[in-house]
Structures are given as structure tokens and as C-alpha cells.
Length: 168
Image (cartoon, rainbow, N blue to C red; front, side, top):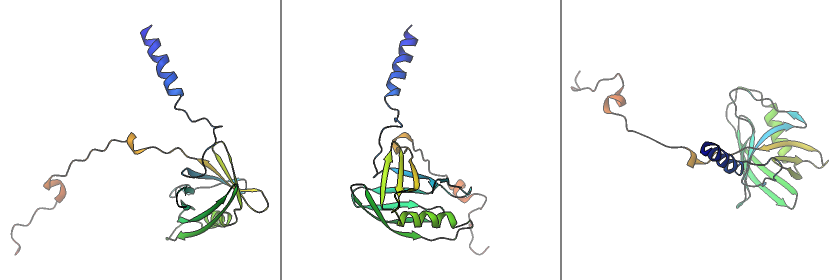
């Protein structure tokens, strides 16, 4: 009986921690992961993370990735009107840039947004949703434990032996 009461208490306490899918998510300070471009699911090369956005509330700065390249910039927000000025940090990528260019172009064409639960719709002048993002849960650093032990001198040297005579 005591076991059942403890289990019931645990389940009740954990149910309060769940994120409801219908609960609105904030536009700012949320990790938005791209799911669709113009109604089509994105395709991800195995060596690339999913494109994402992070809009910082305090200074109207945008951070994110369009695919292979990181992107940044600033955004302007007035009620449900939203616009971006972007720059990308280019690096050599071995995969197709087509999707990334679409993401950048659609971000620059954004004029408004709508949040429906955990989904962010970025819309253009035609009022159609061109980019669909989903809020991605963030794991707080307090969940992790960090343990570090300094390597011994033998571990630092690996298979190499210290030289005792510089003339050798």
C-alpha cells in the first residue's frame, strides 16, 4: 500500500512538469527548430544539424543556423509584424546549399508570424506560412554533472618518452 501511495505521488508531481502542447510558447528566448519550408518537410544531411532560430528578447538579436552555415542578425517586432536583417557566417560545405538559401530568402521575406502552441509560423506578404518551426526543449546545464580529473604525466605524453639528453 505504501508503495502504491509513493508511486501515485510521484506520478502526480511529474505530471505538473510536462509541457502542454497547446500552451503558447514565447517568440523570444525559445529554440525554434525548422520543420517545413513552403509546406514541405525539410531534408537533413547526416552531417548537419537542423536549421534553427533563437530570438533574444533584450537586444533584438537573432542567432541560428540555416543548415551548414551559422546565421545572425537583428529583428524588428511590432505586434504580429516581424522582419529580419540577416548575415551568414559562410564556411565550406560539402552538401547542397539550395535548402539553406531557401531558408535565408524566406527569413528575409518574413512580414508576420503566428504561434500555435509550440509551432511558429513565419509568413510572407502573401500571408502564407513559408517557414514552420517547432519549439525544441532546452536541457538546462543543472541536469549535467561535470567531473574532471587531470591527466597524469604518462597520460599526457602517451607513447612518447621524455627526452633526457637533448643531444640524442
